[in-house]
Amino acid sequence: MENLNEEYKRYERAKERVKDIKEFYTHLFTYICVISFLVFINLKYSPEHLWFYWPMLGWGIGLLFHGLKALDVTFMSKDWEERKIREYMENEKKNQNKFE
Image (tube, rainbow, N blue to C red):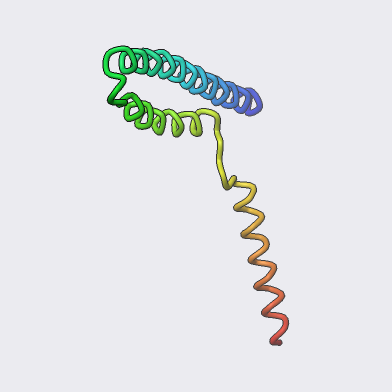
């Protein structure tokens, strides 16, 4: 019974992750379409004043963070944290033994 419950939890987490990635790709597609349209409008009707890069930049920053979250990109993973904690604990133990 316990094994079945764990399997179900893993399935639900995977399902949620796939949903997040799918939402990110939908967001990316929408971004590309809308920004392309804004570039077209800007260059067609007011090429002397380029303004399309402001919405492109603002929305792009939001899209970047959405992508980092959806694709589970982390700069310092839990594994890294655990290794660093163990390293500091070992260093502290070595330094403590030096003075005894």
